[in-house]
Length: 287
Ligand code: HMG
Ligand code: MG
Image: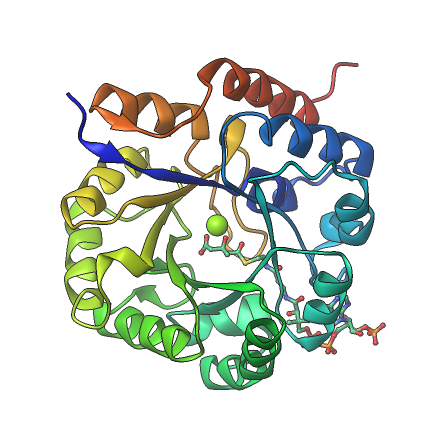
């Protein structure tokens, strides 16, 4: 059966690789992005322009952006936490910038060294600049069901953060289940609150797979009308400021799961499989 189109937003080169302890050479990151860009993906989050003191793995962001081969039809997105990051992202030719906030105070402090209110104030000029420069603006809300510091996240807090990011002009807000601990029931309750603030067309699901429930959570979000999902090829990832968060949902698993349910993704599964192997080699290079 043909149920429709679901977009997969690839975050492996950023959300995946940022968590690796070994500093991966820029040339290897570039090769991964270039391979991914031939797979049918429309958007790839290539890197982040964050403080290298906080995430040393992403210190080569400008080099990576300069080294990739831009493929027509593929938008290269980058994560930016502040104006300094935005300025560098723009200079590097990013097509889309992503700004990020947390649904809890504990995670905001750990990931961004500021309260949620301070983070939103810091992001407002980034949003204004990005929209003024004609770039697409994506938002993320982290820890949408569970926080490593504050426990269970109230759905109303997520809804508030989503509304704030949409008010800044984001075309889409990605709901980050950062810890990979959320049950389908918790995800559904969170979505019910968020959908009071925003239609499913402006939302994306971002499920880490630590607890093995990511695909179940995708199904819950599909049933709620969400049609964009973030994943990382090879199941790379986690979050350096979320202790215990293992891999992102693997792109190859997501694509297979969606295809089995009749969804079109436009991805070439053979290329995705090759990219998954490449990603795993970056994580554990042959001796
Ligand atoms: P801070 O230490 O409070 O602020 O960090 P600062 O302004 O004092 O900056 C510290 C140093 O970094 C300074 O250098 C700045 O110049 C420099 P120094 O003067 O000490 O030499 N700096 C920068 N360098 C390069 N690019 C920049 C930049 N900004 C400052 N953009 C800050 C505050 C926001 C900068 C920091 O907390 C930060 O970079 N945080 C980012 C953490 C991060 O990237 N986390 C992972 C991504 S989020 C995630 O994975 C979740 C997600 O996947 C969804 C989900 O799963 O939930 C999106
Ligand atoms: Mg993530």
